[in-house]
Length: 549
Image 1 (cartoon, rainbow, N blue to C red):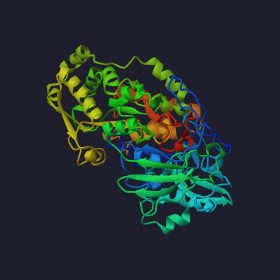
Image 2 (image 1 turned 45 degrees about the vertical axis):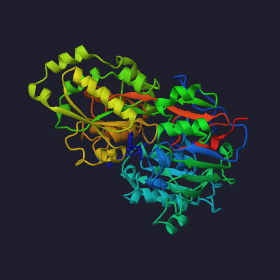
Image 3 (image 1 turned 90 degrees about the vertical axis):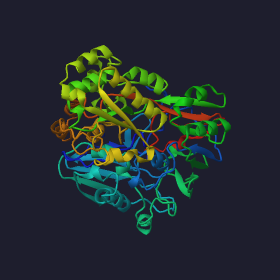
Image 4 (image 1 turned 180 degrees about the vertical axis):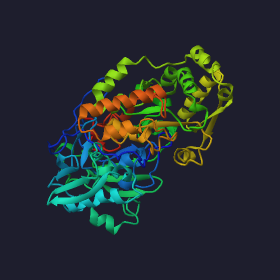
């Protein structure tokens, strides 16, 4: 599990969680093959198309070995980077942040309480068995009923799931809600083979059994502590994503220097999230190519204690403007990011792009290192507020420690009582998920990304009561969110999202605007094809890999 940006799991206490950007009657077959293209910012979405087959590629999983590859229990960089090529969803989110039909060839929303999925008839599991409506119902039902599923929280407004035809499944809701359909482009909509799961229920996703899915690669072997090997599925249904790599070994090197050494020596062919300390070296070496692409990241801090010093809005404002956000983006992240105006980055604006773009343009540039202005605010704070110690916890990775030190420096310059606590990465998740562990902690570090490119997904996780990235227990937008997620009209829903973002920006709770980071990918000169955009957690990205010549 990623200790720097631990994926949050939510038990939503507001109005359920269900939504869509797909209109009623959206139809189509396999998703369109992404073409070489560039994002609006000038960053790359796809690296050059592969030209030839290769026998084997070694790809590193930068956060180390997963605990499981069970997709129902996979919600972070490590397992998802592998699983995305094995197990598929009803819908797919493409590298250019679109949500399209996938295992479901057509989606319709005949009324506010029903979503109907017409299934492809040419899909087979790796063992040759056809994917059926029964497999789909079983998989969705598992997410609905199994409280240990990391996607169970998204089904709070689902009443029932049933096969309504030989190749059709209908999801019935308890109340109108417009997020769930998009979520089926994450593992909320994953499909596994029912027969295999039931035969391996106790160890599904483990080294002993692996998984049984429909993706472009099939599970081969898990050598614990070393690698997970997958091989090409020659019977894969999607003609646009036929893999060129016959085999991929996923390795688990986590040390930045070791990753860099392995890349330069040819022991590792490629990696996402290139070590920041090695960006310049890997960008200039003739043995490989570094590419950057758009990503839905907010590298930031989260206020976590409603009874602490952060409960004072002027203190929050002063610290926010004193932090050298420009310096953090340039120095800690080697210029691969930029300060955000809103807590939600533009890559997640989705259906609300028009009003959120307008809101973002109306706001001033983020304050950065405004020490004198911030000091004036602090000088006017009540004595008991100024006296309170502000405790921040960060994991002990180099980048996160640098970020913590930047916050500490800003606090010291404006006269705040600040304590930085550095803890082992292996234990940092306890601070995020366990209230007892984080008792007395005012600020937590995170690098956050959402399930899908939909701002409602981001908000329900970070700003609505019950969200585990709402450690502050902030409830200021609950009513607005409940209204937005139940609003059928996309324009009206988008305006409500803009109202929520405005309130969060003004109050600086609970997650503050931080640094929007780019995604990075490095491949040696022998291979090409990987998305440069951040799409490797739910999209079969490795199907694009192949020979450069």
